Image 1 (cartoon, rainbow, N blue to C red):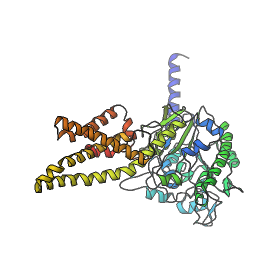
Image 2: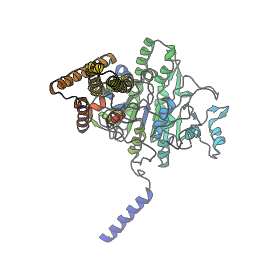
Image 3: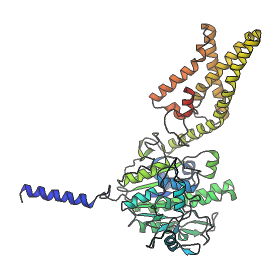
Length: 529
């Protein structure tokens, strides 16, 4: 065979491969991905109660703080729907209704009910169904904002990837009652546009009766057996580990000491399950996520909205997570999950998803992440408590001072001469407050009282220093601009050096709210204007 014939055969082989693999990523080696949903825990819970196996694995993980923003409230339905949509989304209001094909609902098998509601002639044998997906589609479509529920599962199944779900967060075995409140959220990450997951088990078999504090808990041995079975055919497996969500739902019935003791017990059981699951994973080719979509009820009341996110396996070395969405080591957005999973499968992320793939490579461990979370929570708390007082006070006092000065000057010349210095001093004090707030935000403070005293101390020191300059140099007008000029120069220098001060400032942005993760923030922009 001469060289020309060999070239022709090689060209034909290449063309054949192209024809056989038209879709992006279709010919790549399947990258199995597992997502473990550990709802309603905090990073502090993880640090304080993780068992020895999980604690060892945390030290090997890529980890970060996970935002929990949605298109509405931070309900479990909305947070899981947002994960599957890759953009802030609503679920079908409660969001927890998902059924095995053979479970009954409204006295009808779910598979048959699906056919009746959709007109689909094919029976969804073996599948898991989200019956209320049409309601979620309606809620997510508007002239202002559109999200695609179940976008992740839809793209995977369109590209011939199979998905599976396991587990639930039901408080007890479900009743055959349309008004029963289901708590099955994993399918939002794996269903397609019809609300169908390739296969799975979200029913009563995933629960077991106990005599402990929780009447019903996750049947980990059953989940482990099913996980081993589903690995044969599924590319994406989403496992809902619902014990912590059950404990959080029952927290109103329990004392704090009972909750703390039960958390330790649940983490011990989780540790045993992870010890069983870990050897099943091919760590050279697969990825495992362990994340918390929804904060605990306690943290929601406190305004602490960030949750833990841990990743192991392919393309993720140990250290802190980040993403182009946040541009901040140790912080990733919940909308980043869908693009990250699609990237692992070598698939293109649709334009409907607003997140970006996560990355790692930043040095840091769990203790560093706890410090980051503590600072973000403290800054957010100070912002909520201090900024309204500052903004409203400045909005009232500055016009009042100007008006008072004008009245005194026009009507009472002697009074103006007596009180002029006081009015100037007070105006100067107000002009130093933005700089004082900015600088007082930098130390690791946790008490609002300490923060207010530090802010006041910086403001008074700056005012007295500027006032001394006035008395020495006889400069009266430019001195009022001096604090604002210093503040502007400091902000510009900070932006050029990585925006470290702005990240910690009450005048910066709040990453928990997700309106902005970088830049100067609305408050600083308003001050400049």
